Amino acid sequence: MTVAPDRAPATRPAPTGTGTQDDPDPWAARRRWPAPPGGKWPGVARAGGREIGQEIGQQAETGTLPVAQAWQDGRVTEQSEPARPAPRGRRAAAAEPARPAGKPATSRVRMSAAQRREQLIAIGRQLFADRGFDATSIEEIAARAKVSKPVVYEHFGGKEGLYAVVVDREVRALLDRIAAALTAGHPRELLEQAALSLLEYIEEEPHGFRVLVRESPVLSQAGNFSSVMNDVAHQVEHILGAEFTARGLDPKFAELYSQALVGMVALVGQWWREVRKPKKEMVAAHLVNLAWNGLSHLEAKPALLTRPPR
Image (tube, rainbow, N blue to C red; front, side, top):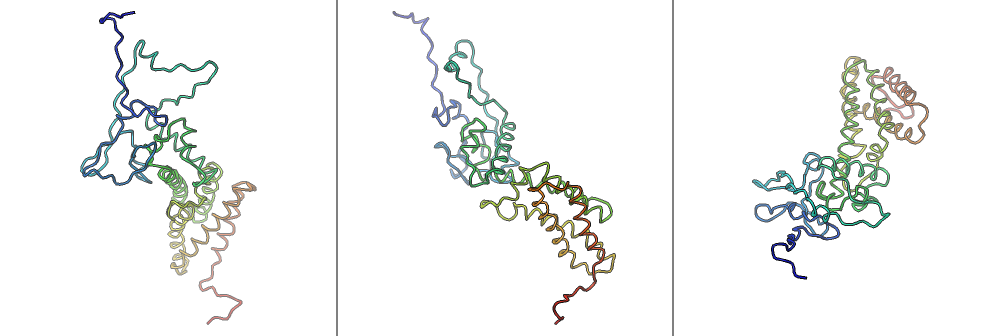
């Protein structure tokens, strides 16, 4: 049967994307990054046969990496993804492949770049807390989000970038809580508020706390629980320094005592995370009882009783 030229079906242009199983999006080519000046990329990771620019740590947290980027003066700047024309009529029907009867839909939910980013951070946070960094894979993160692996690389540059964002958020969340507790009040009240704020964080954010206390080979000491407690100790040091001066004690030992106090609270907090009794208010009260009464009876020049002074 011959079809008249004026009634022949129009041929549809071939998709410009990769069309691979790992990247089925026919619009993927419009999300390619243009080459930077000189043709050299500062750092890349391969995913699905494509080169994707890495954004690690704080850069990954503050730069949204929507989908496309342009290079200007040697820097990466954001670009919006080109709008996709909505299919109409028969094109709309042809664009949706038929699904076998009884088989549930597995297509990913459409989200904005910011929504997808927050979804990936939440999934990564839970996986890193439950399994740790090494046992968590990009494949599982992508599978739980129902996206392809390149989407994760697009937002964070890789597993290291996602992990750095998760840890940075938890560090800031815990420090903000404790800093708010140390704003004003009697020194004993400040100790109570700081101890209670740590216990509340452990109770309310168990996944976040587990992420912080787990050791990771990809982050320096600036991104773990010990570093957070060290920052808190420096804040306590200023409080103790003023108190020591007022009591006629040597303020140079304020750092030592602040490390001892914060270390005691941190270790008790990790223990309490497992046993969860007594109640956090009673735990904080006993911690402050030991710390405050010890500070109230400090000797100006303490010495060991078991050894004679040299």
